Picture 1 (cartoon, rainbow, N blue to C red):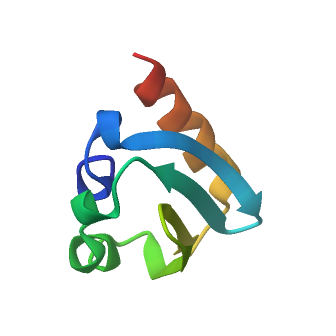
Picture 2 (picture 1 turned 120 degrees about the horizontal axis):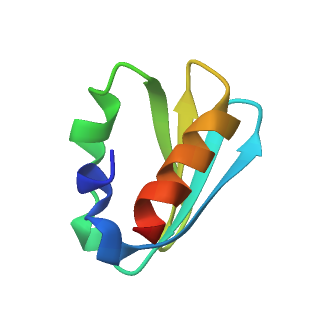
Length: 75
């Protein structure tokens, strides 16, 4: 998932913003691979409500995903 979002350096923040939604703020939209994200088994849909912001609608609870991703980004 991190690589489809443009890599660690492209992700400014990640948070669970609803039961099944992850919200990311990015450095550059150009690094985002929406097609690859939609092919991930856990992702139902990808939304871009504004520039440099992307929401992933998951088919499961987003909180554990957010915690795992934050830990990976901090390393």
